[in-house]
Amino acid sequence: MATELTTEDKKAVEKITQLAGDTGINVTGGKVRRTSSRFCLGVEHGDYNGTELFGVGTDRFIWLAYKPNGSGRMRLFSGNFPDDCIIEFDIGDVPEPKSARNAKTWGRFAYGVDYILRREDIKLTAGIDAIVYGNIPGGGMSRSASLTVNLILSLLDAGAVEVEDRFKIVDMAQAVENDYIGSPCGQLDQIMILFARCDMGTYYNPSSRSVDYVPLGGGATDFRIVVLDTGTVRPGLEKSTYKVRRAECEQLVSVLQKEGYDICRLADIKDESLYKTIRLRLGEEYPDLCDRLRYIFGAQKRFYEMLDAWKSGDIETVGRIFRADGIGLRDDYKISGPELETMCDIARSVEGVLGERMLGGGDKGAAGALVRADAVEALRRAVDTAYPRSRPACADSYAVHTCKVVQGVEVYEGLLG
Image (cartoon, rainbow, N blue to C red):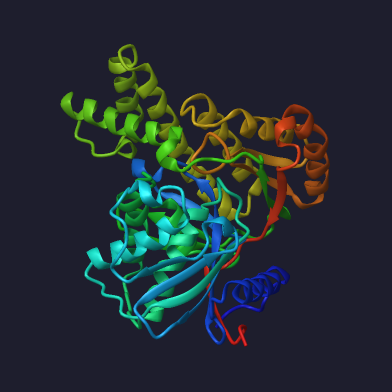
């Protein structure tokens, strides 16, 4: 059963209804699927390195209103990218993967879902009319993963196709970005959105490919998740430092395998003596690659301390580890950016901010902070004062979002009368 509509849900439905009237896309009587953003507490950039993961779903969303249209044709419009006009295509008739024809349109996600579903031998027969609208910042909170998961679930539902294995949804969503679009993302975003539950942390163990839900321990300090959107525009992961870092980690694994180490991912290096041996043996020849390892090794050790702190309600320790991870991402993984670090520097100066760091793929986008509830307004004032002075080019585009922990996927019916 879907949760009660929020003010933002109601605004989104009003916007969708207006867009449907403007474009002639008929979603009257259809469903609305809402997918969340995500906030990773650990380990950022750990998914493609094989670490365990922990995070929550957050209340910045993609809403997709859709209805089967009685044809084999897809007709979709995004209220966030109106200049792309209506994305319209016959089922099975989409551009080839990584095609220049669709590289700059949001429609590449819809094309990619069609392509990957067919590749997985899932045959869609029902075309849909759909309106997409979202309020997820463009960088750091997994807007592309939320959209992709939403499109897959909605098209499967419209075609009355059931996929019981939720991890197959994760795999297909990743494949849309990896194989069709050319974005080298891992699976952290899709997992944290698809499996997210209200007021619970989501713990993913890659060794058993399982998800467990972890409530925050009793007596925790009242805190908020605050997202600090720098107002910068981040290109896709395929054009960012993310792609470079992922390749560097894979390169180091290859070097270590040739040296005789029995590892498949950097997360396999958990033993302190093994880590020190590798640093001593390869540090001079591959200093940058060993810095990447230093971040993953340290973040992986901190992960278990953070998880225990969450379970016991020690949010101060969770915040301290969140901050330490941010320093590692900045100094060792070297995937942050100047605007992100300006936001972190400001946040760090405010009493009551428990921890802060960059979010997501890196370079640009958003930073995040764990903040005592009574310090949120002080943080907002500090950002409003200092950030436009430090980054005048972003003075009109930055934003501060206070977020709640929410369900990752909700479906509403009866809203589009």
